[in-house]
Image (cartoon, rainbow, N blue to C red; front, top):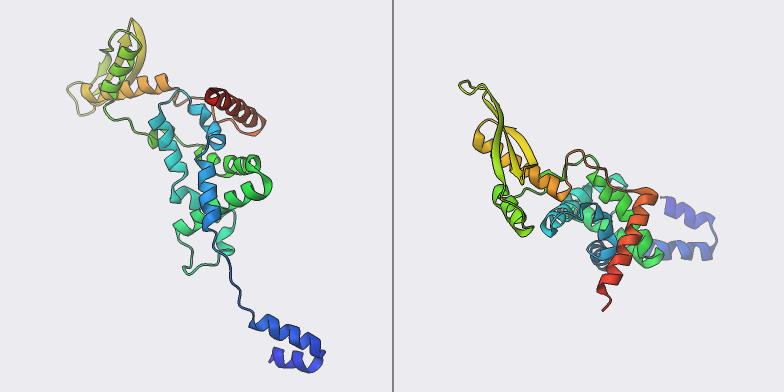
Length: 246
């Protein structure tokens, strides 16, 4: 064998080193603590500053976006595409989604420990938050009872109740009937949408009004990355410190 040939041709001290290396059993340390630290960082204020783009949305909407980003499906996708699946030492092969997600969070924890939290937050922004590009946030957070929620928002702002109006309809007596309904308050159009029935059109119009209210329009500005995202993060961090100061 190659080891026997090595014994015959090398010096005794080298053979001893080979024996020591051959009998040494690698004992990789688990990354549980680093993974826990990475998740804590992602739940902390510095990382959340890049969700400042959703600052007009209620907390439940922001939490729905965070849950999507922190799901094993998204984290494992990021982890696999940066090559961790070829480096993981684990019992399951190919690595499961949970394993890939934990490894990614361990990388975040390791970056925070060795390079500082700012660098770790940049990593999260560039690889995790970037998964929102091309995504419709309204599909990640589905509002229950939109008409009732719209009425509650208007009441809380002291505005007149929303009034649905039929803007136009087409093909009432056909299988392709279409109705367009708009919600008005104080003679101002809040939102409008089309539906197969008046009831569906009303619900969709209420959802459109909520999207406009929360700043989640389909044509909204994209998330801030690069230098603009860094400036936004610094400003949000400063505001958080000022708010927490008694």
